[in-house]
Amino acid sequence: MRTSLIETEQIEAHLLQLTAPGDALVFEARLLLDNDLQEKLQWQNETYNIVKIYSRNQLKKEIETIHQSLFNDAKHKSFSQKIRQLFSKR
Image 1 (cartoon, rainbow, N blue to C red):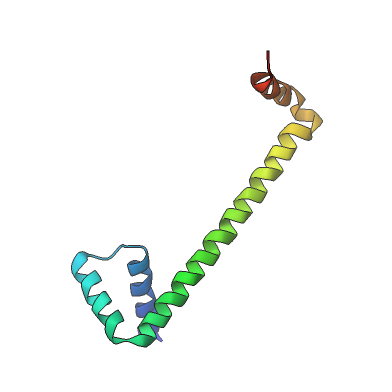
Image 2: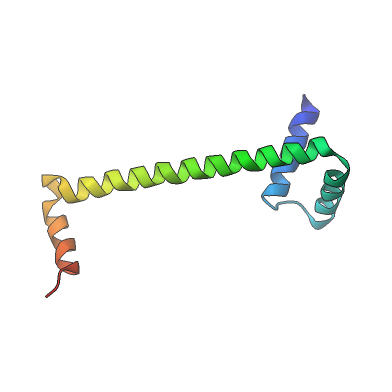
């Protein structure tokens, strides 16, 4: 189990480019020789991409919620009017 965790950490460091140049070369050599490690690297990279997309979508939802609140709630009416005046044609 510990070996698996260490390998996962090494893959993460490689993907995030946190390894020292010498360690990166050793890891890349291991990738050339170990098809299982290549597959693990691909899956971990895919997982990071999915998490990144999910996080971006969540952030967009949060921003949209704040936008709706600022421009539609009565308590923010003066703020909304000031912003609209900044961007209105004069």
